[in-house]
Image (spheres, one colour):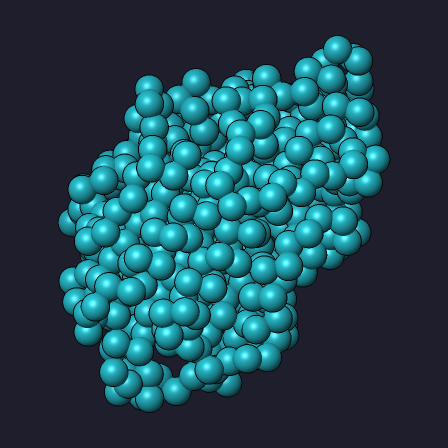
Length: 486
């Protein structure tokens, strides 16, 4: 029987995932985007970091990712000046677990953030975990937080400057957030900085709307006609869906305006060209079929990175995970990694490659959203296939409270719809133990090949690779499976 994960056993591990041994010092092969030697020799004060995290912003809800209706000129401009990833994935489709991975470089089942951090849900990381701001602060960085963090315990995050959600209308007063960012940028110091800005847009507000009923200083609302929105393939085309999508579009455009304001403050401070800027979302949109699901709609997210000195657009199809972000930031800054090995790797050296070799596999670990939503799933996504393991298929798939209360879900229920876009409602709620999809031929992930004899070879291969990852990362849920097998 497996022992519970301890810091000692974790430190002793060498992670071997997908056939590649990942040691703490290992860097990917390929043409270097930056010279590592030059990187480490440059003054540390020239390597600032601005991390912009939106909340529930799907990959298809920006102009630079192909949405021709929604207006996101500032995010699009950032993409024009940097690297836009077309296949970036979060580790889980839930806010706190996702954020824990990008800030620690560990899967949620490794760092302990199994579900949401706030209120009665109360999930929290292990106290031995090292976080991005703490590692950078130890290296003499000045650290700041404006808005949403949503990961616990707070004691693991050491910020010199912090603006609470209450001061900025629960992270939706994007003008005030930019003002506070400018205040941080203008502080007189020789230290480099790390600033995390956590927006609440376009997360639902009080379960039913998207925060558009409030008035925000300095923001001119941009409303959208429900008839113009683009209905995703995983949702039914009904009035309730269109109305909520239009509402979400408005929230995203407000978010985009705030991003533009922050970037202007950074430019005015004279530090724009010495700052690594990252824009990303924690998971997919807050609609059934996306958020809390390991289908691509829930875990494939926007990721845009602007590197100092790089002023032309790159588009990367590398399949990368949020666990790769911390190693990348640490390599770029020259800051040491934690004592324990990280399962991810830096992608600095492949940023100018459209389809770099060896970047075609990511893993997912979803256990909870709210504490009432016990539905652990593990998954593997390659360039072509998705394999999902539902650990307790006898359970009905649970709905997050904001999704259950939404006009979209209530519309599906009231109309007694059998289909949610391309997927049957019945198969959405009742899932088999294993799901296998050929995403190249079936991008909507509706034709489950796990019982198809012609796909048995790939099923076995992906099943074994996922088991190997879970074993090497001490997935506690393996112990449950050990009990079940006896």
